[in-house]
Amino acid sequence: MKILVIDDDVKICEVIKLYLEKEGFEVVIAHNGSDGITMFKHEMPDLVILDIMLPKKDGYEVCREIRKISNIPIIMLTAKGETFDKVLGLELGADDYIVKPFDPKELIARIKAVLRRTQGEVNDEKVVVYPNLTINLTTYEVKLEDKIIEMPPKEIELLYFLASHPNKVFTREQLLDHIWGYNFMGDTRTVDVHIKRIREKIEKDKYPWRIKTVWGVGYKFEI
Image (cartoon, rainbow, N blue to C red):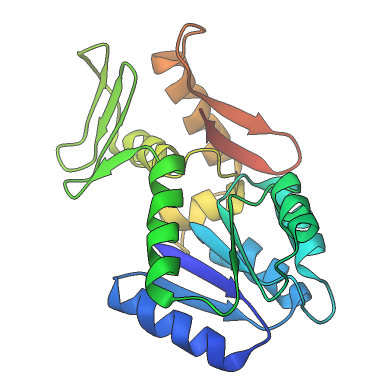
């Protein structure tokens, strides 16, 4: 999983990066709010560690911008410890809040806890499980209520990718790059066609999940 760290303290970023990489995470770093928003849109991280006191755009503004387009987990990391700051951060959509100075091991534990709460059930065999839906990328099988649904590989890959990042919005261009590759010569309508076919095969109103169109942005697997 990829984690974006947005903090202007270079030393703290280095410490966080060191500990996260030891845990197997990929880490990307931005040192101001404007760059943080740009990197978020390009890097597609699975979680953001966000400082409040940032140059150009503060953490609150960055959090607002991210929440306009994504429900990705956000952990606020800041020297401010007053109750008001904590409450404001959480009200803006942060999932957790850690005050500096912090124990890196505690940060790792908080990250894993947040990811467990926000991710679908994913295991090492590349299987995502939701109520009445199982997507197995190892065997390229999709089961709906224990019935195997016939899908071509690209539909399965697209569904698995979206479902393994629940509530996270992806643009059509990002989905094209990830599923079809950067050298793919087709256009974004390819994504629309595949999404339509997937919906026809698996979506019913009774399920607590669906592939949602986010107008002007792209798609997300909503739970």
